[in-house]
Image (cartoon, rainbow, N blue to C red; front, side):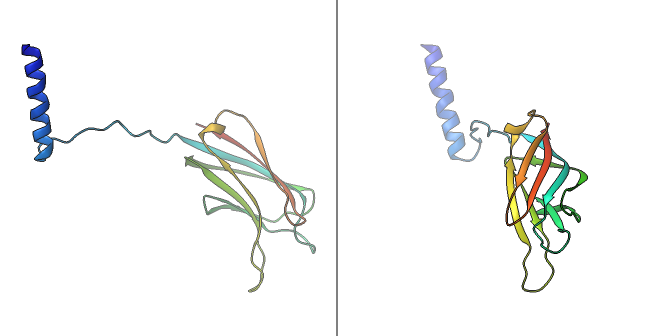
Length: 141
């Protein structure tokens, strides 16, 4: 009986303290986002988007440009870019176009998350317009 009285007293005291701002109520901790790294190793151009010469492809990760270059049909390039991510990371490929009325061509995108950790070397294919690109990457801790 004394134990029940003490528990009720402690509960009432805690409720009063919370009501008057004297005690902060604790909630269950939020789920922390798992961080990871996406390693972009290289990109292969099977065929370009541009009809007259090389493409000027560039890659963005979550909206930030991380690589730009020039590739023609059946050419590849080593990139070796590593970016940190959490939650969902979006990787996009564009072909830069010159000129005021000619916007850059969006060739595609893919998303990675912590679910991709440990799956080894992966590839993402971009086939838009007349372009055909493959990007090789890995997601690690």
